[in-house]
Image 1 (tube, rainbow, N blue to C red):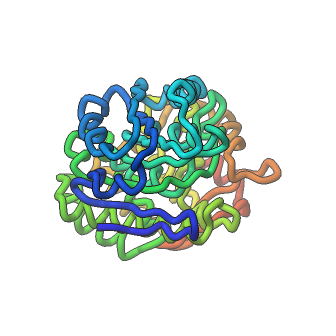
Image 2: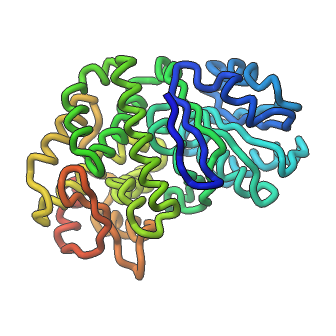
Length: 359
């Protein structure tokens, strides 16, 4: 299975198959180039050798293995990547390859965007969340103690290789966190896909190969369509992809990076966004109930009691990148299958929703 992210001269393929990073797909991009492969301590023993064997047409291949975890998505880790690139004497024709989850992909992409003012990179995502979300669309960056993903750049990859075999070794908790992002696509863009997810949630939970490939393909297809329409979030359509993320990023920041996986925080944030949409009479109760049932089936958390006060929570939300003129802009649902970016809502109702989840 193959998709194209259509961005003119920055277009690139997404390969979705059981051996997506095979030499046939990679050789045209890596031939006679110096390659830096970036991964982490968890992924390296599982897939690093397999990947580097597929880079036999490259001129030079070297690797950097970073610690695993959201808490290492920092400027220090970014500096390690750049230092390795300099020590290898990579040039503007060189290339970086990220193999791992969203942390590795985001940091490697950001390093590639910075190094000599921009070199190419390839995404090889190994978690469900990174396969359906962070590897596609060109958002790269690192975290700061005061806010998640506040330092970064738009930098599109040359290819995304989604090897579905890597999901066989993915821990249950991380797999469920990825499914939260899959469910998001149905909520914001495709009501029929949401219904299909409801019908097939048990097969997806069991990692049925056919169901999983269909879910990944449709998720990437939706994201590619949105990115084509609004690559750098200038019209607001791409912001739809952040349903639950303004709340979710605050959860991650206030709880300390690592307590909640990104997809877990997004799942809670999505329920918060749906609750507010309901309070504002944009959707009815059934949408939140159906979503909560899917999350419950997957074992995702639904509360964050005790991590902060409402005022603290709002203060962190004020740092969100979508905000304009110190007004929190939120992604809400106008109906199942359609989202809206808005700052036109009752702030007291928003705070009441937050209180329901944190107090």
